[in-house]
Amino acid sequence: MPRSSSDSASLLVMRGIVKQFPGVRALDGVDLDVRAGEVHCLLGQNGAGKSTLIKTLAGAHQPDEGSISFGGQEVRLTSPTAAIRLGISTIYQELDLVDGLSVAENIFLGHEPARLGFVHRRAANRATRELLARLGHGEIRPTTEVGRLSPVAKQVVSMARALSHDTRLIVMDEPSAALAHDEVGNLFRIIRELTSQGVAVIYISHRLEEIREIGDRVTVLKDGRTVAVGLPAEQTSTSQVVSLMTGRSVEYVFPPRASREPGAEVLRVEGLTVPGRVRDLSFSVRAGEIVGLAGLVGSGRSEIIEAVYGARRFSGRVFLEGRPVPRRRGTTGAVRLGMGLAPEERKAQALLLGESVTRNISLASLGRYSRFSWMDRRREAEDARAMVRALDIRPPDPDRPVGTLSGGNQQKAVLARWLVNGRKLLLLDEPTRGVDVGARAELYAVVRRLADEGVGVLLVSSEVPEVLGLADRVLVINQGRLVKESDARDLDEHDILDMIMEGAPA
Image 1 (cartoon, helix red, strand yellow):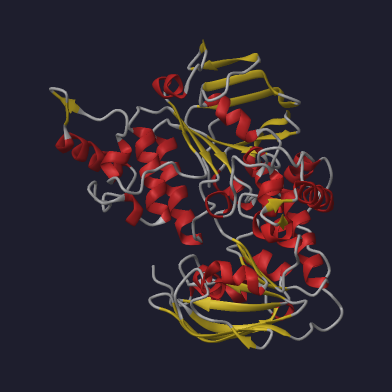
Image 2 (cartoon, one colour):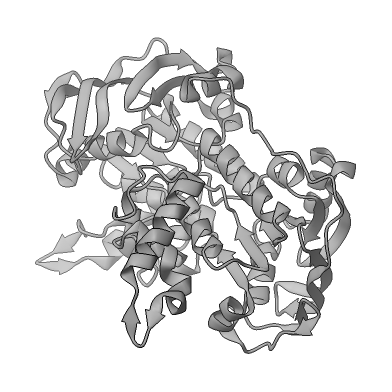
């Protein structure tokens, strides 16, 4: 259980923080009080102001009004460098590590130990070993390339980099989003070790069940304002948090399943094998049916979707509406055949963050707007506006850069891309990662609506309740093999967890 930190002194105090952007008041008088040695959970829907607040704390944004005190002194965080010098480090959801550099080079990037003007690599490696040992991960070698590490090891490297700056406060933005269940437990162990040494942690997560497990206190934002400050995590129920976040009583609401039987077979996979990942897997998806893939991270779930889409080499056979699909068709061929993909990493793999919502929606349908080498921009804009209205993308501005939208609205833009021309098969890999409670319900409704319109859906999710609540049929995957296929209504969370954990490597 998290320890109480009620007798700890306040390390960070933010009062009346206001931040405005053109046409948007992102923060409207936010308060935050963080004590030394505590885990303070910052909660709120996408668009509530969490990202703007932590960027203000990191020195990336300057507040228009309000005050910030750190260590008892009022401060001005004029740049990320100024925040780091004070002892404030931020670990963003998309880890900003350089895969081609070693662990030590990443940890000391920009402040390398030097001697006579040259980087002192031996000193950097020695300091790296000490930092990793402090975090309980002395097995990570300082000379290993970061790109070869597991997701949890990369999180450890990011924390070590923060500690290399003599950090007193670490902000963690969705640190568990890319981790398997057993890896989350290890992350929590590291966090508790840090807080026992007096380091404060601001913890941001959409997984509300984590809050009471790791948190000491909770602050909730809604529409750029603070609606609750410093609630005791152990005594605050999930329903109370959701009510504060949304202004209404909302649970993880799944739309009702269709009462009719699914239609003809859309996808059939026979003997699918991805070397080292998936072995001899066969299954099908019918029109109007949502099929969920449940398994641990690394079990082969994502590789199955990538192989079906043509993004990964495989052996075996894939049929779409009864016709064999060429194995070497590539992703362009998949789009042409009527498949659509919402990948796990939407920012890196699906979106052009600097481009408009309109351009991101039309990206897979450019042939629809091309006339004799000219683009029909009017039709493109009309379709984008229709999709923005249909999916309630907020703000409702198709010309806005998609990178400025919240996670839930970015995911809606990805789905809108496949609604323009219509799809036979939609592949969804972690569709609600980093998406808040309210936006999740909206995304669930969109996916169910697509299925009701006859689209076949193949869904991967790390959250077992999501698979059970949204899917019609569930395939349980363990180490690349199908261990169970069942109607979702005939399974419960414990059944699935037993099957995916049994025989899984420690």
